[in-house]
Image 1 (tube, rainbow, N blue to C red):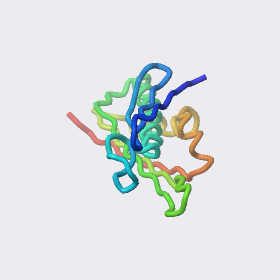
Image 2: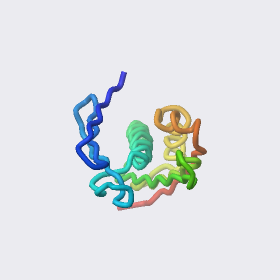
Image 3: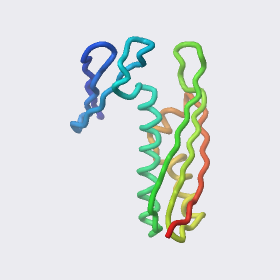
Length: 140
């Protein structure tokens, strides 16, 4: 079982600590009484999704012996104006940089992450439409 602890530090700031001992600061917008000293909880969901799928893709491409030099993941979440303002659609753009990368290998790694391995995507897909795209950038 995964665990986390979240402690209030004042205002709208909280510090979340994972069961593995890593910490992150969360805070609200000054418009709502925060001080903008950390990520918003909904931003953390997007970061978690990008990190989860990125780890999958990096691992799969390494096993396929692809010469990956960089992976960037842009994640955008659309929310309605009404509360609870849950994500209704999430767009993920994967930018994979490398030398002589096989498009088929990149495409397959992304597909495996999105359809089988990424537990964050599997959790979020029941409440938001998740779409993805990719670009391959050749580097020297």
